[in-house]
Length: 437
Image (cartoon, rainbow, N blue to C red):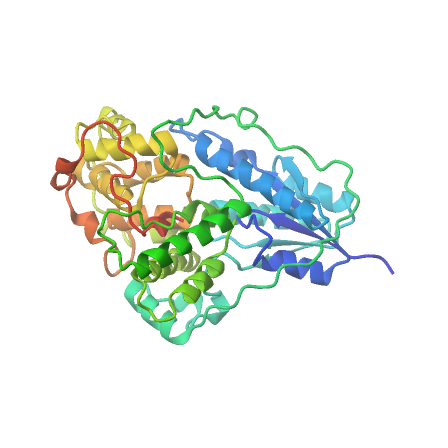
């Protein structure tokens, strides 16, 4: 009887713990073939000349993939790494290793789903099935109290019904051992230069450094809750100036840690419901789910006006003004401080993102999609649904029944008195950093 081999196509699920496709492959197959593809599509330059993936996020991704390989080796397995079009690479590997089926986690944004469709078509020519799993949300689609087409467009209604009528599934077990076929050429990690990106010189003023990988993600998860427990016991205030941000968003964005892992850690540390930071973190996970489900329900329509009549006119912003915004040269100290930090580190806090986006859209009257594309390049924790969904919220172009952020209505000039024009790391740092995951 021939052995069964399942290829596990890793994308934004770079972890071993709470990874359903990896566990299911181990259970269903004699051998598992883990694969990661660096798709050149994500490292190309757009029509406006910016990279789809900037150097900070690419470095984080390289570290995450390297850590996944190391962790798989600890389970007796190996990760195949390739650079190229997955629709070409995966069928080649499937034939080479006599693969019977391919597993992957389904995405929701149109670029990612289009790539999945290309892979599915290519595999089907070999009579191989691409099996889709849903593993990027806190609440599983099948556990929602409504079908996708009937999900409330109002976040408040969505939150109320989901929390009342749905449960978060437990994390799936971690495989005890992973058997891979004999791999003759596992492949090497590309360098930043091989991906067409500049090498990074870290700014010495940066207070945050994000090391990619599941290992670092779990360290940050436990570190955050340990610090939070101490703060709760000492009854420290969120407004005391202490840093209350979880800073888990980069690892969640590429799946080094799952939303369920974060949720059950919240549950363990907040069973009495009195920990405000834990409650805010859970709220951000719900927003993250909401954006993904909205993209699943509406597709690209979610980030477009309902009709041409509803669409507010966009003035052609002066190119010089946009470049001043992007480079932190607007002359508004708070805006410039935030943009300097973004450009120097690949990360700014939630409130900074809201304020600089509001300034670009409502003060400069710029096309919001240019700002969203700029964030796509720069942010370490970029995730399509949350990034584009949040910018659409600020621009007021989607079907949401209420604005998420009261802070979006604030004018930057109301907040600049406490800040100078030179960059200061994290001018405001709150627990809401997951908004762009």
